[in-house]
Image 1: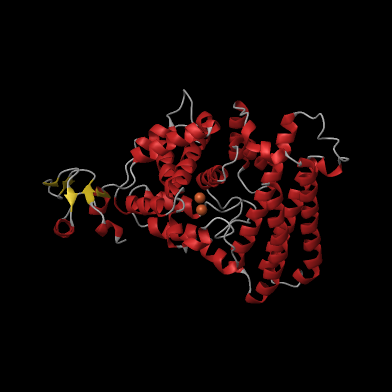
Image 2: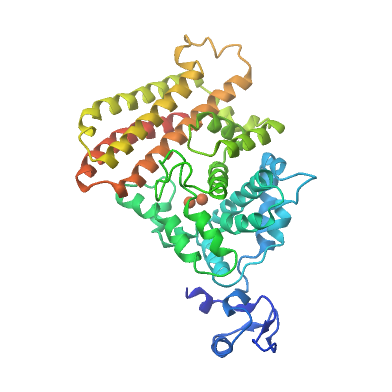
Length: 418
Ligand SMILES: [Fe+2]
Ligand SMILES: [Fe+2]
């Protein structure tokens, strides 16, 4: 990390030698030559843990962002407000970051717009869920805070082009993206303090309990409870990034999730949302126009995807065992999405019948479901690409052709309903 050398670094606390002599006072600027001299001393605490980039990420700055997020998303404020529990914003405000962790957080949150918002949002949700799932476990809260804020620092080592919204990504690009939890784990696991236990949580933040996540494809029973909380918080944080009405989207997402996330965590999320009903009238007025046409088109595209699945089946049955595993899960996911769509009843409604005279709330729900299904399709596309890492080389051309066909249908569905 050359950043620490390019930017001004200061002592985050008094620095003492092993025999108790105070060498540097808190707040003192530490230049290169002073650092070289300090390294020669035996110190009570590792030097890296006592220094931070002067104008870098601090708990206070994260808390300011957190307040802004709570103002923007009332449901998030409701989640984070309780008379019985410490305020997650206060926990964030009280935290201090030093050394390599603070440098990483600083570079990560500055390298692209919106990264600090995402990290803080995930932290707010993760802290609130941890408080509810693990009451009284203050150590777990401290680790979760660091894990949530730094969960995506591995993205720093990924070509920024791949991370751009709407970027066309093939298996090679996804392979890079899928490495970001591993990279973050490597960056943090040898540090002192909270970064080490946080690294283990971060490693699994994209794992899914049905074995369809990444990077390791772990299954239920192999992912720690803490990582499961982080994974759910990350999913909800990702929804906010897309600018949707969190409550309604999350409620629909919860309906569509089949064994991917921890049921107890999802139940806590559902209960929290039930306590707070957000009337988000502005979200979907636009999307409600021509809702019937849109819903029909989306239904047709989902059927199209299932037909693609069927047409590839004979060829896929000849693939390697990991490939067949991937294929089976993809098929199950699409079928569950289609089932969720059917459960709305929209696929059998005669022209206009549900639309005329129905309450606005129903129409809004339809728009949210459409949006959610599109998001699930995109997620699946991403996960299929991520899984490519473990496939035999011979499977790849077959998979790429299949993904192209499915993606064409999923992408069109997106343009229909956003
Ligand atoms: Fe993330
Ligand atoms: Fe991530």
